[in-house]
Length: 315
Ligand code: BDR
Ligand code: CA
Image (cartoon, rainbow, N blue to C red; front, side, top):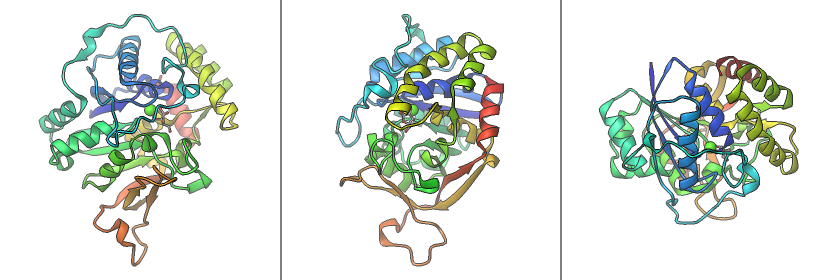
């Protein structure tokens, strides 16, 4: 079984990823760590507890960073995930017993050290918790099996940012943390907008989820009513994008993705703050800005039909 820590800011597409994780027998979910992003930290943590309970999951929830490393408050517009982070669905009182004491970054350090070479971290929010773990215990980089990140936009398939034309939301939200993650010597795979925008859940697909999956499918469909308005009004898309579920798919089916290797950096300031740029590994001469950074993997293509079928059949 694959041992996984899921670092998240639920979030509607985070909820899709959690439902997926709850149904995958190949995955041993060791913990759900939360971060500020789609809503404030109290709300994303409450949502993680609610979804854990709703989806019958047993992994503990650990609250993480409520402040980003650059100290800049970049609240996400409520039009995306709603005031409650889950598209304004009714959320009942949650069972707090799933919440364990301590910080997310310490949980990541302790769990990785207790399972050397075995833990895959799937991070689908701002990368603040991961960067704090690396700052406090740089040796975790050598002990982790793999880090799969939903974030960034590298310009493949003409895809630019979603927060600004330069920057994707998870990177824009904490560019300092993201840049530290990409600079570290650990195996990172980036599942960015270059591929996630191929994963469109349209009205028919969501109706099928509601029919075939029952209560939890209907819950996702209701959340997506809100999410779809954002995609229609702001992005001109019909349907919603399943960003975070695709990071989970990568963990299981990397052969469904086309990838590129090379060092990555993040612009920490300027009007393009949060932009992610990869220097292709075979580019002769390179540039000093990327010098000393390890090669990392970015996804530039995906078999979307296989992904959507797998998600639907799994949940
Ligand atoms: C990412 O930003 C968040 O709003 C989503 O949950 C996803 O992780 C997409 O840019
Ligand atoms: Ca997310």
